[in-house]
Length: 396
Ligand code: ATP
Ligand code: MG
Image 1: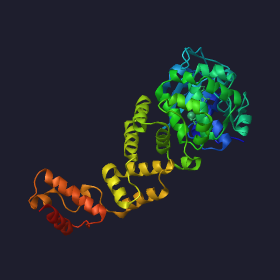
Image 2 (image 1 turned 135 degrees about the vertical axis):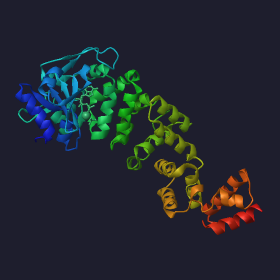
Image 3 (image 1 turned 180 degrees about the horizontal axis):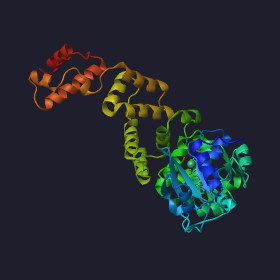
Image 4 (image 1 turned 135 degrees about the horizontal axis):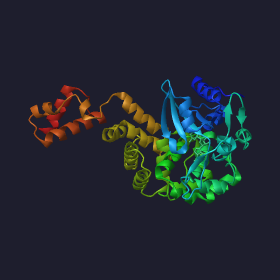
């Protein structure tokens, strides 16, 4: 099977070839094409050094994005293409970064430094596939297998442990036995890897379709990167994969930590997630226990205090852990769709109207809240006269 290269990629490969340099598409794009999965970025690997690449494309915009690692980005028609020179990584001393990288004129050396066989296949239209490590067979067998000796590869760069479980979740592939054993055995090396890089992988893993299988097969690895959890009890699989990433993550804390909110909050701070995500999750967990989502009035009260996003999150989390049903979620959705106000700004009377009735200072706010409550409970309609009448009755 041939890979459909985009015009931009073809142009780059052709130009390098015309100047005497071999160049191929490599990694994710080749893997995904063989699987039949859409792929959006094409990484190009070439024997030309970055300076040689620059002189071949002297008439184009080219940026030194990762020049230390031999990567430049060529911009064609507004699209960026990463072109990386064949390289070998030097020794690793910290399970994170090679001490040095050096360029090589051997394609097989470049492929050998890659993490998994399925990621170590390259392709161009002249030479077809170059697959030295059996990546095509592993794609057929749906297996993630380290290139070379797994322990050595994980010691070099422990992030590969997270990449193995992440690819397993995204692709629905199993992890080959020796690779899996080495990953579990060396999991504590993940403590040397930056939290930001771990989080990128964890998020991809949890968002993908195979997340439930991976979490149940590799709990030790997950608990190493989420030490805030006391265990790894999981919700029902079908429900889990029907939920979004944020709800999946919250369910792990709800089911596996006594003070879920505190633990979630400190995990998210440690992993340096964006603060909007952290605040959202904290809010869902804070309101989770006391939220009455089984009645329209309860739903409106919740909407009133936290807004629609968090309210729906509370119900979805409840459904996922089996403490609420889909009906709770529907009641909130219906409450939102009903148009019944749950914020003061939607009320058909304002502070001035109440002041005109003779109320002053904090009494005004109290009166407005009590009117909103009356509308939410169905005691009063959201109409000016009815609201003013009720206010006069209650406060005079
Ligand atoms: P994705 O679809 O997530 O982008 P990808 O396979 O393209 O998957 P990238 O992180 O974009 O992954 O990396 C591109 C390629 O670089 C990989 O396919 C692999 O060959 C190599 N690679 C990336 N990270 C590592 C690593 N930590 N160790 C060894 N090789 C790596
Ligand atoms: Mg990629």
